[in-house]
Length: 354
Picture (tube, rainbow, N blue to C red):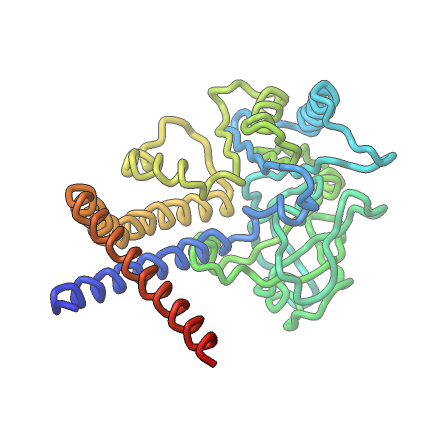
């Protein structure tokens, strides 16, 4: 084999290895945020599902009635599209809703501190599976709504420990109890967005106990999507907010090849904001990983340029010399068959002699 061919094979091998490494990096980026993979946790894989998020302008956030209106409309539209469970009382879809950051002061016998709080409802922790250090997730099914979930930073500030599930804290004039303590995400994007400030999650019913009216700027749903785009259409048509006042995202498609191409095509313009929508930290983290995934896609294609070019060149050369190649191929096949025929003939002759 000529030296130049060996060099070409080595270079192409390195390019393909680079492509494989970039593909692995893309996969790692895609799987770095559990918030973007509710479909895998909710669906058994027998049906096609989609995760859809709606983030509204804070001035047009939904109240509790608005959320329940959206839930009823989504349920009706699923029935209209014959998307119902064959099992009695089984849910085929799930949702969650949450507020923007609310500042609260939390106290214990050991001190008090101001925390950034997110008011939640629905199956919030199915969409956002925080890593628990102790305790449990509260839910809408709890009979008692005076429960909160706090991060380990706040736990140490209040009690000097992380294993403090069940301990009381004073918020306003009401006592709440710690359902669990969670560890903040070790994802670099999420870590930067949350910073060092302590954080707490509170059920909307608990927020109402304090005499407040909750408003939700983020609504998320995971529902059947037998036809691409149907789930997003159902959700966007059901939320009682004007289209100009919210952003809709189909989370399950955000790392698709098409979406990554769209990001590359509009790179730079994503930073231009023409509305006052404030994304929650998990959406901002997802947008950062989208940009990274799109950049990795560029490197993936760079890794394929030389192998594709080399393969194309040999295909063109082969096409141009197809007559020569065909003649060589026919002659080679004839030669092989002649040798084989001769061997068989000689063997038969040897047996006959015996």
